[in-house]
Image (tube, rainbow, N blue to C red):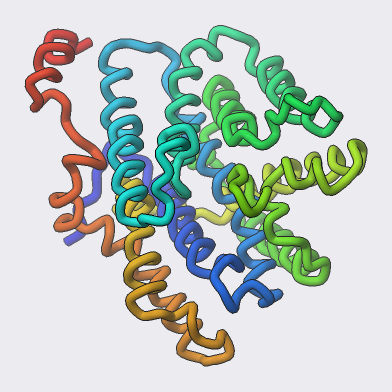
Length: 355
């Protein structure tokens, strides 16, 4: 029998599960993967996922952000974000040897670790931001991000993930302040149908328009390519790039809330996975890189082979429950979700500050 934590809201755990599943799909079907580069369906599909998955995650995180900071709050951030960020940064850099560059260690988080760094910053900022007018803070944050479209050569805030995703985190904070609980909305079948139609229309638009893939990935830049808002800035003039950015953000918000409409509100067979999505998020790269890419060598084959897509879809659905299983959690908890109270230093610093 499945063990359900009665204190948790199944709606948000369901949302987290679906979002992490879509992250798996995005990373497996990314056009960066060899022969998928020229596959229009995969480009549009991955583009669609990247438009709303991370914004929706930050909206949820902002909704559950804390208004007051204390020693226990700091402890939880260190345990769930800072320690995994440091440990996995070192692990990824070592095991993926061609990415080991001491000059950008920790300053340019490896691949997926940017999420932990940005979320860490958002959570530290949240208690202070709650003391301000959140609508004003949201406007200022957007203006700073938009400023990159005008030729300030040394001001490239648009390429920094914190400025990219902080607005969505603030939207979640505004929802909390106004007591807007999505799990309590009674979304009807008509709402869900309209949401599905909207997703379908956006996908078809992307499929027909065939946008350049790197224009929609807000992952920063590296030696070979520039992605996200910064690419839009360099490719288009100020007015057009600003327009593209605004459209991008509007679509992200509408798609995020369209996604929230589709999330089931009751317990499901996958609800429990939503509590442990951080395990799947941090560990799935090892399967993608060593198991699927190097072990099976799937990306070395022609994408026209039917088993190619079957293997990728199967892998996407398999990874969340596998990597969130009790066995995997037991083996990796010490680095993904450690308990500082059980360490010598933690006992000294935290055990005497329970409140």
